[in-house]
Length: 199
Image 1 (cartoon, rainbow, N blue to C red):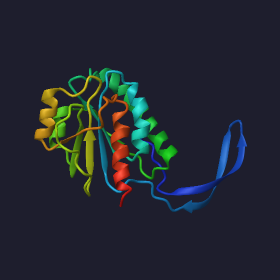
Image 2: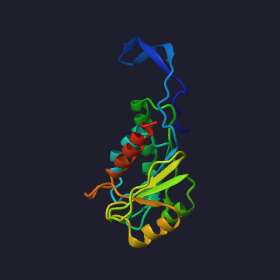
Image 3: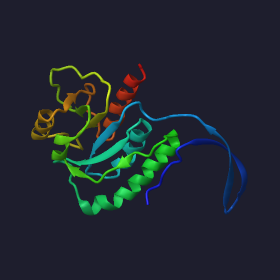
Image 4: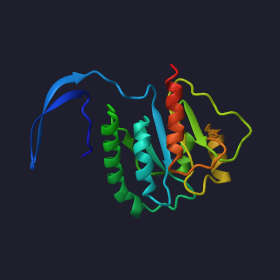
């Protein structure tokens, strides 16, 4: 059974505490909405070192991702036997990050899919971080849902970037330095949230 956050945030006070646990008393609801103004789909690569997910999942959640889709890239070194046990751990990480950042909704974590599934991904705008300059400018954030992805360690292959761009994903550049797979989600989500903050 998936853990759920309460639909309302409440001000609480500690009523009692002992070595066996504590009791809290609900005082009053706090009217706050911490959710992003748009849907943000984080299509994150399965990495060769799965513990990297423990590094980038919390910041992805805190920065507003509303859906997490693990993606199997050519350089992902995917093993179903290794990933399956990790899914429950990742759900716990997501829930903890939601509690930390006072999110109102818990983002859904979907089962891993191969890259070709992103060809038909439904979102109003789709970005793929690509380390090789394309000569074009980064797209502007438009109204409507957004999906983003990036490569695992070793990057995206030529055939993969071709598949994505031909199916409507726009290549974006995150600066002159090459970012680690664990850094990319926070960089992209930070840029999205900054643009949303202009409204």
